[in-house]
Image (cartoon, rainbow, N blue to C red; front, side, top):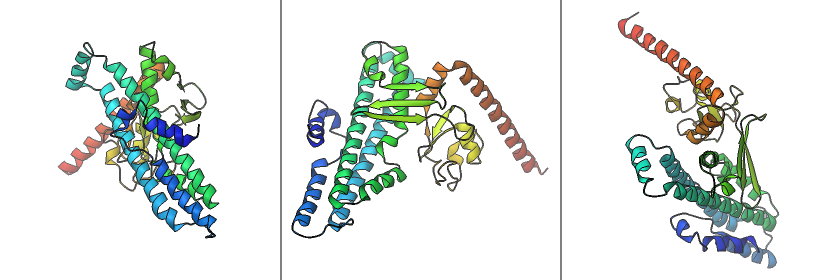
Length: 317
C-alpha cells in the first residue's frame, strides 16, 4: 500500500475522533500542487529548482501545517504530563478519582495516540519533501527540513518525545500487563557511554537521544531542554546563562546563547524534563541523591552570597 493511502486510512480510521481537534499534513493537497508542476513540465515549461508556484503554495502551506501540528502535539503532551505529575489539591483530586475510574489506562492510551500522531505527520512531511525534490531535481526539500529544525518545529526533534518515553518507562516499572508491548518500544540506558534513550517508533523509525550534559559531561540531572532542543542539567544551564540556580532560567538575559549551537533566546521557554528526572531517580537512586545534595548545597551557597551582597549594598558597606 502506498503511503498516501496509508495516511488517508489513518486520518479516517479508528482515531478519527482523536484527530478532530488536531491539525495534520494536507498530503493530497500538496501532491496536487506537485502534479500541477509536473503538468507544466510535460508541456515544455522547464520547471527549475526554484518554482514560484510551489514556493508560494507548497512551502508556505507546509510551514503552517508543521507549526500547527507541533503546537497541537506540544499542548496535548504537556497537559497529559501535567496530570501525571500533578501535586497539591489537583494531585489529591486525581488520586481520589482513580479509585472510581481507570485514568491511568486513559493516559497511557492518549500518549500512545500522540506518538502515532507525530510519527505519521513527520513521515508525511518527509515523503512530500522527497517528492518535491524529485519533481524539481533540487535539494530545496532537504534544505526545508533544516529550516524546520532551525525554527524548532521539526516534529521528531521535540524533547517532549523524550518526556513521553520516560513517562511510558515509568509506567512499565509500576504496572505490568497491557502496557508492556508498547513500552518495549522505548529503552533508556543511563549506564551506557554515552547514556542514551532509544525510541522505536512506528514505520521502522529509530531515534536515539544522548542524555549527556555537554557542560559537566555527566548524565543530565534535574534536566532542562532549551528551545533549540539541547539538554542540560539545571545548574549547568544556569551557569551557562550567568544566572543563579535559585533565580532559574527565566532570569537569563535574552542574548544568552546555548553552549552547543550558540543560538540566542533559548532559555526563556526552556522545558523542565520532569518525567526524565523521575525516571533517573527510580533507576539510579544513589547517583540522583548525590547530585540532589550537591545542587541543594550549591543553591544554598549562591543564595546566601547573593543576599549578603544585597544587604551590604543596602546598608552602604
